[in-house]
Structures are given as structure tokens and as C-alpha cells.
Length: 228
Image (cartoon, rainbow, N blue to C red; front, side, top):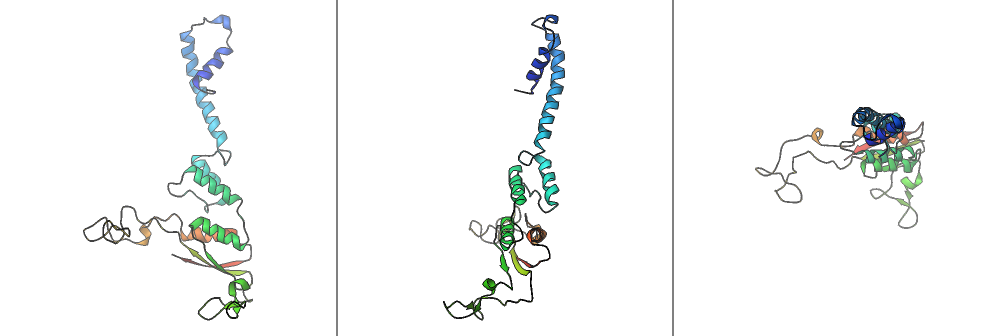
């Protein structure tokens, strides 16, 4: 294999004058193998360094550094996330649509797995209008539609939803043991008093807010509500 100790040894012996040494030279080979090992390590290091210069081939902490270079702290490796998954997120983020309503919906759906609600008070499709039935209205008290306003230009209201959490490790939910709804109960299963801070969440509210800000146009406002 190119670059391994056997290959390096053959390269060294190929440049030595053939008449200087016998075909069987164990002492010479032993000395050259020591040199070959060092060059094999250097070759492997160079190959590794070359791979870290491209998103497609970078690995380990170098992929984290690439994410930080492009996106600061907004895009980072999640708990137990492997290189290939992080790489796909980096590539997707580089070409993400921005500055549109669809971009806001897309970035939050990708981040949380749940589609947000976006309301633009100056957009008639969101507000609807007074009318009846199928006549083209679409708004009624307590039925559908929202109050619109042209006094809120370049503003929208975003309702984002936190991702469904993974719960708390080694702690079951409240129910009888063996039922689909959980495995915790008095004297049954693994149960304890807990708080939301103990839940293992991969996405924080700050991540959600930063995601919205990353795709909103300059000089616009997204009034945001984050819910479970």
C-alpha cells in the first residue's frame, strides 16, 4: 500500500546503488525500516491534514472548527452526533434559502422537526376577510382569521415549537409498568422527582431564536413565541 512501511522501505532501497549491498541485507533492512516507520507516520499525518481542508472529507474536531468558522456558535455538534450528520447540516446551511417566509418555516422545521406558524399582519392570505361560506371570505369571530394591520410593516409573528424531547435518562414516565404510556409508579419502575432542566434537549430556545434571526431580512422584526 502506498505510504506504508513496506512501500517506504522499497523506495529507500530503490535509490541505493545495487552493487553496494547483497540481495539479502538484514542489517541494512533493519536500519532502513526504522527510517521507513518515521516517513510512514509523516505521510499519514500529511494525508490527514489534507483531508481536513475540505468539508467533504474533514473529520473529528476539525469539522466542528469548520462549522464555527462559517456559523459561529449557531451550528454546532449535537450530543453524540457523528461526523457525517454534522457534515450534511453544514452543507445544507451553506445553501439555505434566506429572507423569505418559506426560509423561516424551513429553518425551524429542520431545527425542531415541527413546522412553525407564521403570521404577517399585512398579508391578506394570513388575515382573511369578512365573508360567508365559500364566497371568498375566510374570517369570522371565533372561527378563523386574525386581525391584520398595515401599521406593522416588515414585521411578522412566529410561533415556534420546541422539539419533542428525549426525556430524562433512566427515568420512566408516570404509568403502570408495562403499559405504552410509561413505566413509572409507586414501587414500580424507575421514578423520581424531576425538573425541565434535567430533560435531555438537543435544541435550546436560544438555538431557535438564532435560527430565525439567521434567515430574516435586515430591518425586519419577527415577534417570536416559543411553545411546547
